Amino acid sequence: MRKTVIGVMGPGEKATEGDLQNAYELGQFIAQQGWILLTGGRNVGVMDAASKGAKSDNGLTIGILPNSDQHGISEAVDIAIFTDMGNARNNINVLSSDVVIACGIGAGTASEIALALKAKKQVILLTDDVESKSFFQSLSPENVYIVESVVDAIAIVKAILRSKSL
Image (cartoon, rainbow, N blue to C red; front, side, top):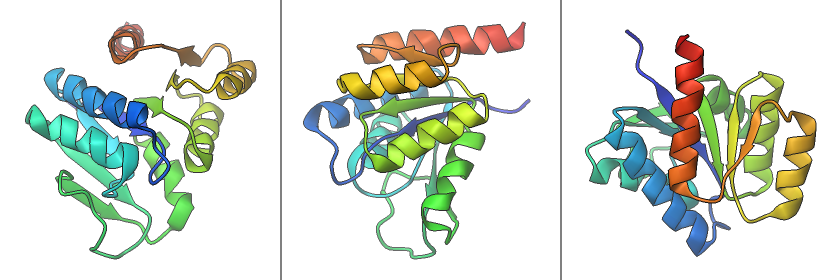
C-alpha cells in the first residue's frame, strides 16, 4: 500500500520566525501520523524546519531539489531527489503530494499553491498574509482551506484523507 505523502511548502531565506516554528511543528505532527514529509529539500527556511521537525519524531523525509548540486541539502532529508529543473521542480513537489500545506508565503510558495490548484489538489494555507488567503480562496474555494494553527492544519489533512478513502 502506498504511503501518504504530505507536502509542506514555504519560503526559504525569507521565512519568518513564525513560519519556521509552524514548519517544525508540522514536520513533527506529520511524522507522528506515519506520513511521509515532502519539501523542497534545501537547508533553509520552511523546507529545513519541516524536515528537522519530522526527523525529531523519526519521520521519513523527501527533498525535491531544484539543482544537481550536493551542497545546500537539509541534513534532515532522507531521500534527496535532484531535478536540475530550477523552479520547474515545484510541479513535482505538488503532484507528488497527497495534500499540500503552504506554511508562510513567498513567490515560490505562491507558484506551488497555484500549480496544486490547477492539479485539483487540496491546499491548506497556514499564513498570516490576508491578501494571499483571499486570493487563493477566490481561485478555488472548494480546494483551499485556511487555518490558524498547526493543529488545525493536521485536522484538515486527516479529514481530506478520510474523504479520499471513502
